[in-house]
Amino acid sequence: MKIAVFAGDGIGPEVTREAVRVVEALNLPDLVMFEGDVGGVAYKRHGHPLPAETLAIARSCDAILFGAVGDPDCDQLDRHLRPEQAILGLRKELGLFANLRPAKVFAGLEDASALRPEVASKIDLLIVRELNGDVYFGEKGIRTLPDGRRQGWDVMSYAEDEVRRIAHVGFRAAMGRGKRLCSVDKANVLETSQVWRDVMIEVASEYPEVELSHMYVDNAAMQLVRNPGQFDVVVTGNLFGDILSDQASMCVGSIGLLASASLSDGKMGLYEPIHGSAPDIAGKGLANPMATILSAAMLLRHSLGLEAEAARIEAAVAKALADGIRGGDLGGNHGTAAIGDAVLERL
Ligand code: NAD
Ligand code: IPM
Ligand code: MN
Image 1: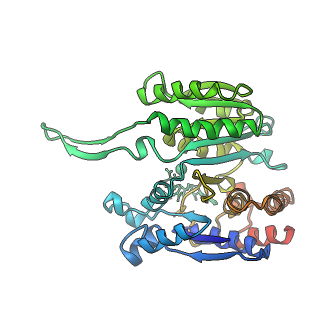
Image 2: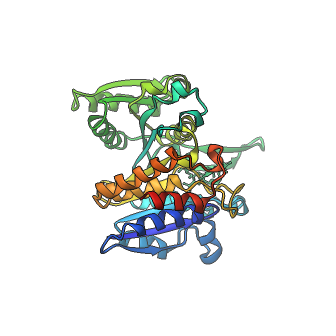
Image 3: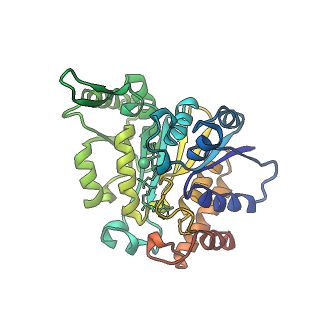
């Protein structure tokens, strides 16, 4: 079992360190970890955010544990050299098209939600976000119009096969949960979304047990704070899923809690917290590593088939939270390493 560990920028190395300690504590036989540079750190050392050596490490492994990329120093670089291209490049190169972002309130954390506790306590949802298409990967550019004005442009598109494969992921996920799938789009305005919705309806005929509904993204943003308990599985495109998942994180307490899995057709997966490099708190030992620790649990489950070990890690995190271990993001004063220690003790 080979895991690539790409810690990246900002708080990436801080939170990844704790997740690695947790995985190491399991003493799994035959597990080897390989480190690689990604993001701004890789640009500074190798001149590229996703160096060929890093990609080669990724391809030789069964799974990737990813911290975060993003560095304000690099925001003026040509887009293809910016740190974010590392994560976008890995998603594309490895065909990681299905992004699972579960959001559930941990017992005892109802009062940490940005929502009222009685609303928050009902949240148990899964966002299935398409990760290889949409406006993220369309043609784009900045041009000067004949009258001299600058114009930025990005093409949004989804081909039916791209929608179909993520639809199947959504329906299968719903079959394993509450059998309700809500497809979020903007079909009242966008042709991209019309194709999305049409294909969702076509695929639904293969899953007669799943109740499919459709919601416009603006309404979904509203419903997510009004009554998040109504959602079981949400399937949506790359851009809408990016935005709604950050919003979902605050509904369950903090962005420092939300883990994710980015899966391909095979076993290869990339696992990362949904948050970024948090330059505002980087280097201070303040970041909550729980999202990354929970991402490591998803790695064990989805790429290595180690369900029992994954569940042990999740239980240790839940116990730490129930015992009052909270980072600054949750109104507490436990630092990154102290949270890692607390999870390890309970493991
Ligand atoms: P961010 O998620 O990095 O931070 C948003 C806010 O949440 C900040 O106030 C930060 O301090 C806080 N926060 C985030 N993670 C936290 C944690 N684990 N514990 C405590 N607080 C936490 O988003 P941003 O500020 O918009 O972006 C910063 C950089 O990260 C940008 O360069 C962006 O492109 C990048 N980014 C990368 C990823 C990724 O690597 N997958 C994801 C999102 C953003
Ligand atoms: C995420 C991030 C990335 C995205 C950025 C860093 C490219 O926000 O993983 O949610 O937009 O997908
Ligand atoms: Mn995001």
